[in-house]
Length: 519
Image 1 (spheres, rainbow, N blue to C red):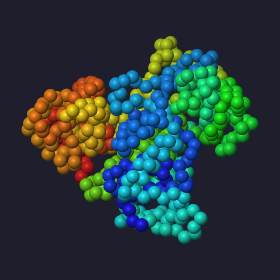
Image 2: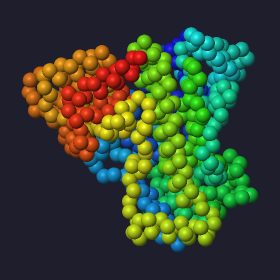
Image 3: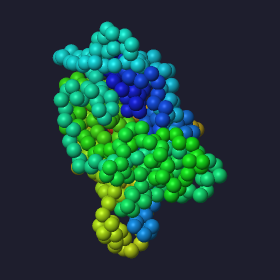
């Protein structure tokens, strides 16, 4: 078997990468050791960036049926007082979706798997074990054994992406070390389907109990699904099969065995780890194989899907010959620092929650309230996610490395989210009308990369090759105004390459991007 890309591991990251590549016509072979989807919930949070990726795959509305809004997170101190509060920004939503959701992970993954089955260039192989991998100047290979069979089969491809989890056999065989971000805390995670008559007796929002005696978390999930995360103390079991005789006493503050059905209970050691390198020639790491993030920002799975989105369009360009292989170096250059910064923020939140010393916990409560002037202020979760700070961006341009807004728009009698009307290649978006000569220059440059020129708020009635759209909710215009700019250049993964004050100034900026993609 010979393909363009081999993907090992078909969790959320691997499945999303396979779908993004398959949708571009890339030949993919994906392998997973399990016979089917993992049936229990692990991740519980996703964000607007994930929903935008799902929108690109044409399955966002199906996914949305298995989500619910992510409720505010209240941090309660030693005396039960509110010491910190996180929430999502109100509409209009800058990326076209609510900033944060809770979701049903098995249903989420099932919808992606169904999408994979619709893509002619994607082959999925379950119950397989990858026993070895390698590469040479022409490509990469794996040896695969089907469960229950002795001989192995060699599969070759131009590139290999390891999405094979935190223990990643591929990363281990490559000898790639993990950088320790110095967070290792034991927690018990319990998922319960709570009886309807008990739901009103539980908190109606997410709560972080920052109590030194037993730090814990309560999360409201879709339907009657509720999760508790409870810090384990020295000497308590870290067995994956946590005994129910020890579990229910930890939950009796909230519920008893007769109040619901236990869905899942597992002990973990929450880690902050990141691989030292994400690319070894034709072999790349993604998802948990490249990084592990503690759950205090619900960013673990989201980080992996960002990997998939970043990598998919770059692999496609390299495979098609539109860009040199060196473009793939920008994957790790961009994603690794972003993951480290996001993970350190999650760790900082974790340290607020995990303080076990009562005196230090009281001081923490006093300090947090003093920093807020004595009154708790709501922090928007999405403002805690950093932009890209290096890589394929114009670092001197305001807004570079952030995500380009996606307003709801009207164009030629059609209404919808901007991405669906203008595509997802390189895009130049301009506020207002364009001079004909500048429009011709921009269109000529965009034609070389299959890009799109969008005029936002244009009232021009004549037909031109540009897309003329009207914002139904003001998102793009105020965002650009806040930067003092009128033009934005977006990459295929929706990250901002750069912005300009005038359309004429955008021309050399676009030329720089195209040169970076081709040299």
